[in-house]
Amino acid sequence: MKLSIVIPVYNEKKYIQEIVRRVRQVNLSGIEKEIIIVDDYSDDGSRQVIKEQLESLVDKVIYQEKNKGKGAALRSGFQAVTGDIVIVQDADLEYDPQEYDKLLKPILDEKADVVYGSRFVGSEPHRVLLFWHYVGNKILTLLSNMFTNMNLTDMETCYKMFRREVLDGVKIEQDRFGFEPEITAKVARRHWRIYEVGISYSGRNYAEGKKIKWKDGLSAIWYILKYNLFR
Image 1 (cartoon, rainbow, N blue to C red):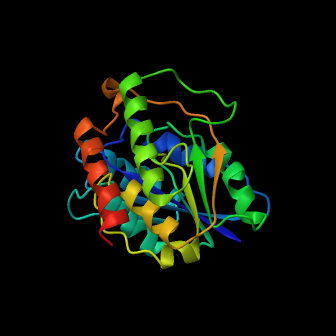
Image 2: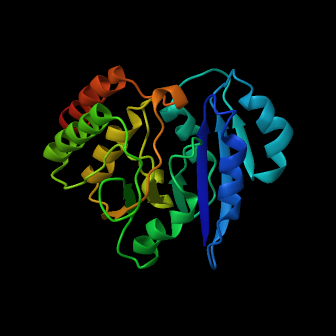
């Protein structure tokens, strides 16, 4: 059994070495790890750090020829995976790789095909931050649920884990943050078994490098409508 960890990177020079260290530290009994970095044409020195310090520590690095966005980086990464199970890992230290085992359990127990790590359920610690970002997230999740007829609590979470065959059956179209509502609509439509588990969250504010903006939230509304109504 192999877990492929896809790390999209754009201007994360401050954090990229630490997230790779944390991912490499994770010990999953009986499960091999495959680490794939996708650099989305960073211009802050991240690419140099990856080339000089990290290429030998991971299984594969993909260098995008221009900045396209998180969805495009994930599309490239997913095409390169060889694992049985795939997880998305942001490079910004907001999510803890030591919690992979929580997400793996429903899949290994043969209960789930897709697992979302929710920042809004469970008893794990969460940094108190950004009220309006929280409200926007809840609105987008509610709107998505209305069309997918699911009861997710955190559609926008980074931690999404998939059986390999789920991703093999999905064509990802969106290049930026539209990936989240798109993949949610598509896995729901195919009636894959979706579970949620509670995770911890150490969120960043914008001064610390958070990239998603209010315009991305407005775009997400359109993508929820597009991928649920206009198939």
